[in-house]
Length: 237
Image (cartoon, rainbow, N blue to C red; front, side, top):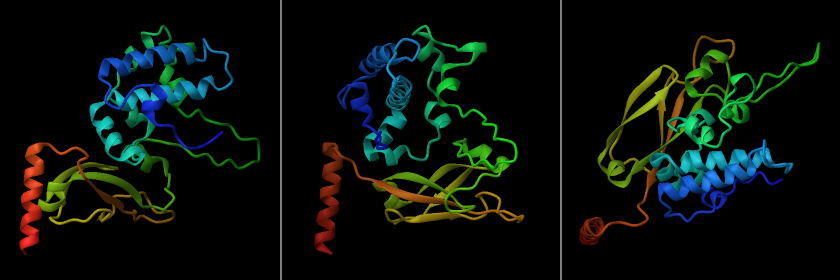
């Protein structure tokens, strides 16, 4: 099976300008079809998870805007918990009559939570877990870059030019970060000591923020006038 993710609009079968009701209706229809308790297809679990994830992103205006602007890169920093945060899971799954599994287990827990795996006696087990940022340090997890953490931040053009402030989640809670004027696309801001604990040391890695400058795909007439004025200024320099 291909590891390349399918476009969320294609998964739900809706156009990119679909309104909230169209997206919700498409989700309900597909979830009823592919729910593993109803479908006997061998890939029902995976299809159902894809549908639920697509709905979680496209039903949230902020996440949808990031996805529309930068595709999967725009939401790459979200964990599964983050993706579904703010989505009424009780409504999404409960409306279908599948709100809970055995023992009161929610559908979200059933399909998206990692279950503990018990290794054979005497054997070593290596497990990759996806956890919210606030819970990483206590568990002693590391990233592919050692003790450093990476996070992508999207900036509007005017904020990149004029400077702005961002509120960034860290292992120690939210912090305010000042973005300097004139920051360039893919430039990295380093928050020292805000990463993971270093193995065998009391020090910690850094949290690195990669700046992504968002270019509007469809500027308003007023915005176009301002950009044209800016271009004229540059041509006269």
